[in-house]
Amino acid sequence: MGKLKLLDLYCGCGGMSIGFEITGAYEVLAGIDCFGPAVESFYANHAHARQAFAKPTDLGDVTARDIRDGLNCLPDVVIGGPPCQGFSKAGRRTGVDARNDQVWHFQRIVCDLRPMAFVMENVDGLLTTGQEIRGKLAATLEDKFRAAGYAVKSRVLDAVAYRVPQRRKRYLLVGTAGEGAKFDFPPALCGWQEDLFSRTEMLSTVRDALGDLPSPTLEEPQSYGDAQPGTWLQRFLREGSEVLFNHTPSKHSPRMVERLREQKAATRLYPNWNHSWYKLDPDAPATAVKENHRAPSVHFAEPRVTTPRECARLQTIPDRYRLYGTKTAQLIQVGNAVPVLLAASIATALAETLGTGAELDRPYGVSADPSQQPERIASAGAIPQQQW
Image: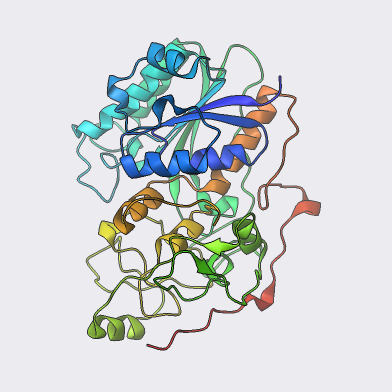
């Protein structure tokens, strides 16, 4: 069969597509999204993708025929993360939020295209938001896919269990067509419990992801300097890249710099703000990377907020993947992305289910084979502090 042809709906900058692509089992046909900077990032980094949808496109106005005509073929697998703000615990969480309609557009397009399989990602709030009965919306969605002939499975997964240096819970819905082999979610590759500092040796931390990065500058692109990758994750993120893009600092007032310098790790600068100005603990996974009202987390070693590149690394987006648009647009793209290593684990399990015949390339951190486990290099160390 060779590589599976992949279509990414609500693709954003392409985090899920990257995860599928790096397994070696998928060919990315196209991505469709209505946010201009994300579309620019997606197609700049997928130069081989077909250009029919290389412009902002509202999927509410798109039909399966439009996609077939635009791609001149049918996809084997459709993936996507419909906008989640209407379901998010950080938002208003009203069941009548118009953005919630997008999951039905995803379902409509998949059922009309009838691919071999699909993967939909969303926040776990989809199970509760605006519903008298927990899970009613998800159950209705799954029933519609079953009625169209798909065997479906759903689960809430935490990205940290798949070696992503971030605690990020997401609802995953996977469907396979026909009566063939049924999909099983990949087992957790490492563990995390929030009580009594319980964590496993292979858990990825903020330091594992960011420890080799220099202090940000206004230079674009920026050199890595003399720092060498000190962990398997840093090596994975650097692969194919010799310089850093999107690693530019935010400007803070002298008073804010002092406040951030005094802030303790794993605390919030503003106690009533749960989703921004959180100071990262270097020896633990990050909190969920979000748009955060343009104010991402606070760096663990320097008195500043994290750069778009640092946020991308916490999402396991490789450094070679350049983001376009303003800094605000870059942060929106990263905050809405699916962690690459989580997507790669799902993609590997799905390719094995479908039996593509393509040789799977198990990226760093994806293989559960003990002989393939990534090592932890204790000497990674913290990055040097810039003089402020």
